[in-house]
Length: 221
Ligand code: SF4
Image 1 (cartoon, rainbow, N blue to C red):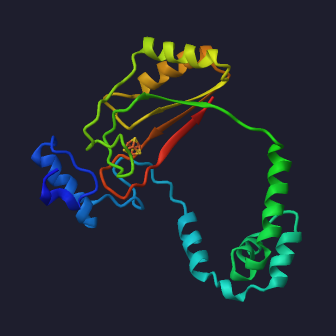
Image 2 (cartoon, protein in one colour):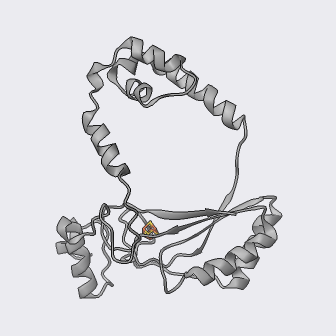
Image 3 (cartoon, rainbow, N blue to C red):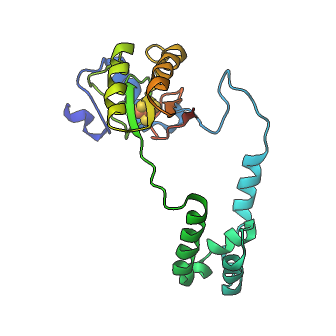
């Protein structure tokens, strides 16, 4: 890395000048980045007012109005109302952390018992067209990229299944060129031969920016 670039998060001397310039602009100029709160071209516009409702409730939340009695009421209720949650998040709840932890444990056990859930993650491709600064796979990193062939996927899955694992989590970066829907679909067909449960996670940040926020599609079969 040359001296001029040392202020940047992740750099590679091997990037072409245009890519380096774009990367530096993304890092330094927030207006150049995609606004995740706006619809992008081609997206379905849902027309929901949920975001406005949440923001309005957040602005109206005055955590100083809640008392110990509100917290105790929230803890004694079988299920929490929104008002109960507000009380539990207020400073009045600070002395009740122990009770809150016990209640949380009780509810968790009621829902899930003592089950421990084990699965294996398998990246079938690490090509990515996005740039999340925390991620080693971001497109500006000069790393070895690989997309497993279907034979390689099958081999990996055979080896994993032999260990007794019954669930697999398949992952890719976001790359329409290297890991498109057809590729993922074929990989899922292979996985179905070896695992009872198949989950997947594919990043869908169709934008290049550097806030490190990554939205993902998760599927389970
Ligand atoms: S989209 Fe996912 S794989 Fe790609 S850089 Fe971001 S976190 Fe990494």
